[in-house]
Image (cartoon, rainbow, N blue to C red; front, side):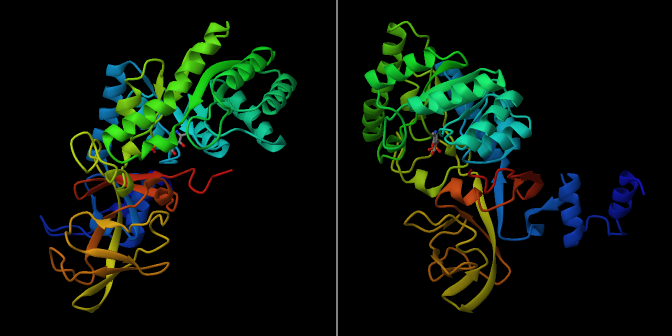
Amino acid sequence: MQRRHFVGTLFAAPAVLKGAKRSFSYAEVERMLVTGEVRGRLTKDEIASPALLLDMDAFEANVAKMAAHCKQQQRALRPHGKTHKCPDIAKAMIRAGAVGACGAKLGEAEVFAANGVSGLLVTTAVIGKHKIERAIDLARKQPDTIFSVDNAQNVNDLDEAAGAARIRLNLAIDLFVSNRTGIIPGEPALALAQHIDRKKHLRLHGIQAYAGGASHVTGFEARQRRSLADMTPAVETRRLIEKNGISCPWLSGGSTGTYNIDSEIDGITELQPGSFIFMDIDYNRIGGKSGPVYQDFQNSLTVLTTVVSKPNDRQAVVDGGLKAFSTDKPFPPVAKDIEGMIYHWGGDEHGRLDVSNASREVKIGDRIEFMVPHCDPSVNLYDRIYRVRGDQVEGVWRIAARGVSQ
Ligand SMILES: Cc1ncc(COP(=O)(O)O)c(C=O)c1O
């Protein structure tokens, strides 16, 4: 049977009363999601829980705001894909003006490349024989990919592999500006730039400097001080390299918490924030320019759960537990639309809700959406993200790099 005919048969609507809501079986819903013929037909009520939801109005507003900010500040935007791990999201941001996407690990970048995303920056160094083989393959597929390095041995290894493959690799010097990887700014970084400059099969693209220690500093002014302190050595290192006759036109850094701080620093040419597209409770808590809640971007990401038990008037149980939310923060998920209700971890599969002071009654079968403590590791728990607008489901995007961290 031809596919179109098959789908047509499946969806030949049974007689329904005019105006009555058509209800679909689980199998029909899944089929609709696979074929993409969803718009206007499915509501959130029909999604199996727990499920990861993306409020498209909020997501699009977040992307538009960051893209407009970067454009106005004349900085490139290369959002970090570690947050979403989803090629469709990377492509949506490129359509909105981003120059590409970052991958934290080679594996994320490979998945993005395989799904047609270009302009890739791999922000973690590629160390070891197999990883270097894969980097060469990736560079063959997407020659504009930039790889991060922070030591001379790795430079030698990459040059040798690129030479054997008869290609040229683009490198970014990863600078130690906060508390993670990278070479020390100043003279050590200059020496590494000179080392790269002498290699036949490598090209220095510029500097990669992520100040992770600044991104979540509480209070805008304290965050500003920290980011300035962290990023100034990166800007100075870029100048030092150029003063020594090596082209270093590019400096990428920044985060959701510091986007409007780093874009004021002369010499940073590109921002690589990630969480702004979704937001999470962790980011809400850092405080913004105008108050104690950081609200520059909207919370577009939620986990949809269902109330599956109500042992007594004070307690209810939802079907989302340790496997449904990130658990790396010392605070639990927060319900999106119910005030006064407290979520307690209830093991792998469940959340226990204290509903004593909930702003509305909670009954078995109710659907409750929760904002996540931390977006990146929460997204990494799901294969798909449901795109919703109001109550309507528009479709799903595959989190194709979910679980990929090699
Ligand atoms: C190298 C790098 N750049 C950018 C980001 C994005 O930061 P955020 O999600 O806080 O915007 C991260 C996040 O961990 C990162 O590791």
